[in-house]
Length: 202
Image (cartoon, rainbow, N blue to C red; front, side, top):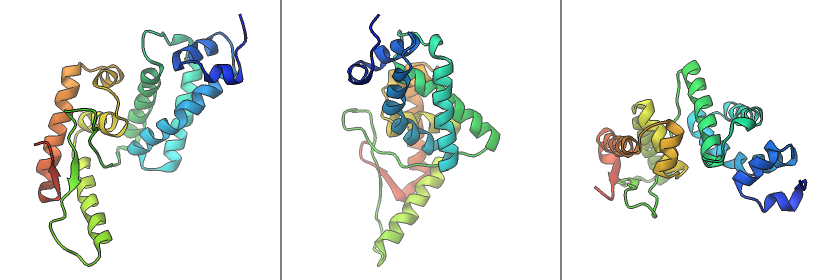
């Protein structure tokens, strides 16, 4: 079998690169790290809001990917498999530290079910930047009041913009339940935040 390296590896799909890693092509792991490091960092920072914790989780995720490389089956997308590992690690860290950070959410234009939450500027302040900061803080406080299951699916859907099917696979939850949790979470956010947030699609 030809030992694919460099440019040839870059031309392969994620799943094909993983197959090369399973076949002993060590350079394939570097390609996987390059393709997923930024996405994982963004995803995990939403949970930790701590750069050190985030970096630790990213490194641990890749370590698990390498150690468990032979358990991966191409019946699932590699991205789904990797995000499942990352999510489980983040959950474990959260259980240990009993804290979860906050984030802002936005709509996905390609998804008719996606709801866009905006800061509702109901007052005129001389310092608009301070007003925006205070409004975002209200949004973040509300997000902290969501239960873990609701917060989890919103991160995956509205931040990572994964499909409902991918979220279903990652969380091990039925697709209908995933959609229900996302919609219920958004309704709860609107109720919690009140005048600070409005939904353009309600």
